[in-house]
Image (cartoon, rainbow, N blue to C red; front, top):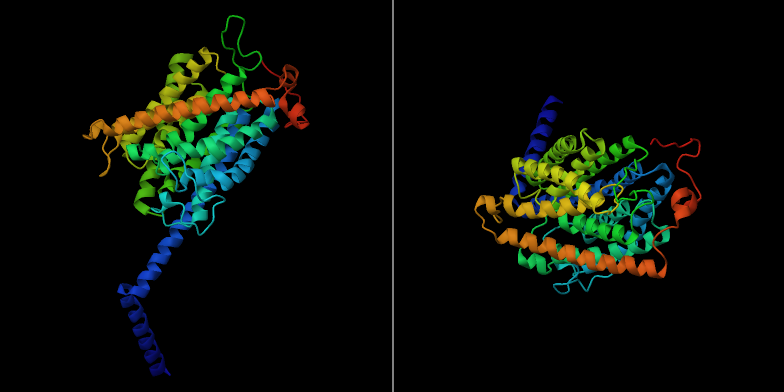
Length: 448
């Protein structure tokens, strides 16, 4: 019996050895390739799920920074911009953004066929077409939901549904095609790894046009034009939203590698986190100096500003430079918020400053700090070529969004109306637009 056991173990060991030696063969090589394919796909899907959860973060931030009487309206907007955007981006948006076409827009791949060869600009990634679509969809939804924050507390709900479709279906995808889909800015050499400009500045500049066309909320400015603070109803909710967004950014930036490349996604996660932390610190210090107090709202937006600023260069800079970029973003966001208030542009959550201004600043800073084998910024001996491409890209997207945004919002205003009535705004959009209240069992009061 003992001899039979020994013989069996010997035979099994030989068989296992044959399998080990087969690692150098074609069959085992195919298995390794299949494993990489599965790992890449699973990582991209996981990253997409994390970015999708950012919708919850935006909902918490926006509702927390606004008044209780508008909380249901904020939640409905975040629900429906993803829902409406999913259909629009599936039908036409993804094709315009990544489909084969010209330097301005894609013209093939409508309704995202799984076996299509129309998406040549994504051939560098091995993941299935539908995995790539899902990952890019959650980016498109992010661009759309940024707009809702700046236009909160005074926008008609039906108008919001209309412009969400146009943003996710046309305006945002065209910007994406220019930079990520083989368009003219890509050919110029512009770099925007995860979307400081493609996603965040696009959403931020469209938010700017919407806020301008709408005008400020009732009571935001006194008779002399001086801004009055309108406090949000739930700062803990806003803080929870910021932490959710911070978590989601670990899908947003490392996921843009579009593959489970261990060294690269680890490095991107580190640069992302350091920038957020530095942004929160410098925003707190800047607000402390300028406002006399370490303002919580400014500090929370500082973390988001650092995240937005590093998104363009998270794969192209080291940890030290990431912290510097994030720190600059934290300073800029405070100055930008105060500037827009003085310009009588009412942005209840600071979306224009966090996403528009800091997205542009982060994109341009990459022209100074980029340090990879293929791309060098000014500070690393690369000259001004990359910096010039970054500036041209930022200005081009700014102009595109301002023109299309003003046309879109002005057209909606003329056709269906854009702003609620004074009576509806005073009563709150929750009851007037949705017939509901976020806090039906509580009496809501306000301090002077």
